[in-house]
Length: 193
Image 1 (cartoon, one colour):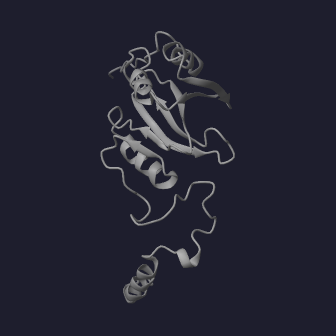
Image 2 (cartoon, helix red, strand yellow; image 1 turned 135 degrees about the horizontal axis):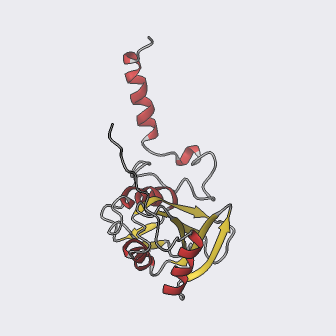
Image 3 (cartoon, helix red, strand yellow; image 1 turned 60 degrees about the vertical axis):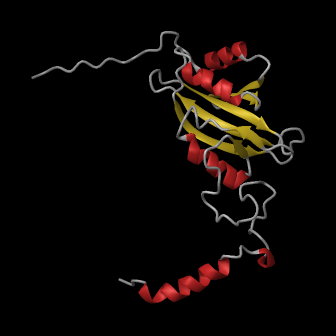
């Protein structure tokens, strides 16, 4: 019977999210707005201006190696006066198994932020969804267009000021009547098995 040896890679610096947050603060002191912790999750809130530089550092630094973008989304804080939106990056190191959350502030009057697709190719669809649902514009994105809603849809459904029931009937999406008509035409092909 063969014995298989399993080795677990332990990070040489033993970094936890607070340690990573400190490294970010040291490297980019003028960009870090705040570091918060909620339910054992550490978030580093940064200005949006150098988000690509910050993310590239987190990805490329050999002690951090945050090589996996777990998720990219946005948050809408409608009642905040200065900065209404945040783009949220959940980063993970496959090699060291540590993680950090970066929250980049995006003001309502300038909803543009640089794309991180050149760092993590998987950001492509996440950024498109964020654009589609929140109206955040990712500059430098290779194909920024709607991904969930029809191309001619008006508004951004995940914004806090979007109507709960969707657009008023007189402002319905123009393709809606076409979809209803087509579904009636195709009913004869429904299977009732």
